[in-house]
Each structure stands twice: as C-alpha cells, then as structure tokens.
Length: 300
Image (cartoon, rainbow, N blue to C red; front, top):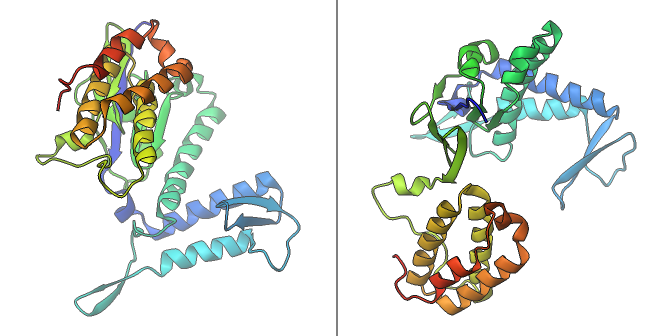
C-alpha cells in the first residue's frame, strides 16, 4: 500500500571489465571470511553431488582444499586464461572468460564483496534510514532490481561499485520494468507482475518446447505442461494474466502435436495438487480453464 517504486539496472560489461587485481583481492576477502566463519581448516567438495562441506579432518582419497590452496587455485585460473586468434596465443589480462565453469560464481563473489562492504558501512554509521530503503534490493548475476528505494540505489551506485563497473538503468518507464522473466508494473498503488518472454522481442520465430513426434518420450513432453502451469501461476499476479499465458502455451503445444485431451488431464492434475499455487487468485479456476480444452479454436 502507499507509494511504490521499482527500478532495474544492468552491468553492461561485467565479465570483460573486471580488473584482475581487484578480483583477486575480493576473492581473498570472501574466502577468508567464509573460512573464519566456518572455523574449519578445509573445504571438501563432493564430486558426485556437486556440494561441499567444511571439516578439520581429511582423508587421502578425498579432494580437499585449505584456504591458501583454494586461493592459489583461483588465482591460477584467473592468470592462465588463453585464447587463440589467427595462429597467435593471447593471455587474458583483464576480465574473465564467460565459458569457464566457475565464471558466474567468480563474478558473483566479485560484486558481492563490494555490496557487503557498503552495507557493513551503513550499519557501522547507524544509517538505518538508507538500510531500510535498500532492504528490497536483489541481484541475479549482472541484473539488479530494487523496490521502494525511490532512486536511492541509483544515487549510490558509484559508492558501491568501482568505476570499471558501468551500471545502466533499464526501466521501460518510471513505473514499469522487466527483470529476468518478469514484467513488473505499478498499477493503482500495487505491483502487478506478468510474464516477460524475451524471445518475443526478436524479429524471428524461436522454437520452444518439444515436438510430440520427436525423440523425447511423450510422458516427459506432457510433463512440461504441468511445470509451465506452476511457473506461470507463480509469475502472474492476476488471474487474467495467468489465463492469457496458458492460452498462448496451449496454442504452441497443440501446434507441435500435443493432444488437447491429454493436456486437459495434466491440467486437472495441476488443479487438484497445486491449490497452494493457484489459490492466490481467490476463486475456483476449474470451470473457466477447463473450457479451453474443449474448444478446437486454440490461438496459434
């Protein structure tokens, strides 16, 4: 209720602009802070579960890293990225290659350290007003979004991030923006969320979802419909937006060989098992939606 604002920002050249000295310093601060917090000597990754845990005890048959060894490996990765161009070998001396497995995590930690330092500074200064205004700030890799800060983040971006990080506002208007797969707007003092599909911005058709005559087993293909119903219901804040997305989805699937009767059965399964998701609309959706599966006039 009351006044609301929403703003989105994008780091225009994150991966290619990170100075190596800054990156190494931030990784060192992060790794040291985590090891100090865990108060353990080693981190032990599980190569099968893709998870890791901290311990003071290690065995010879398990891969393990001390704080210093982990930092040595990270620094080696940063210092030894090479590309070949026209028969010449070049070493990357600024930025990190996006194709390496660790690149997203490394870039994320790099930005996190600056954000951590700024929030810590506000806490030390007792600046509760600005802390409250920034409490609904979120970042996914190089995309930022903030709610109800009323332009505070935009005014302090240069205080948070180094000059090498160019951050641009990406709002469509003062009251509307797109963030990941969300279209967020402010209507009558409330946030309204609908699906944002970036593929629609292209001037060519993008194929999505399997064709039923392809090699994907039918049960897996039809299972996609339920997962998309869950996703669309979570995204859309209004019943109208949800219905529009489902109608469009049905059109795509029918055009790719899916049968309405089978899709209807999947919808009934979603309806019966996911009240916790579609119940937010405040009314029973069954009759309104089931009609869509009885008509051949699906929008293609």
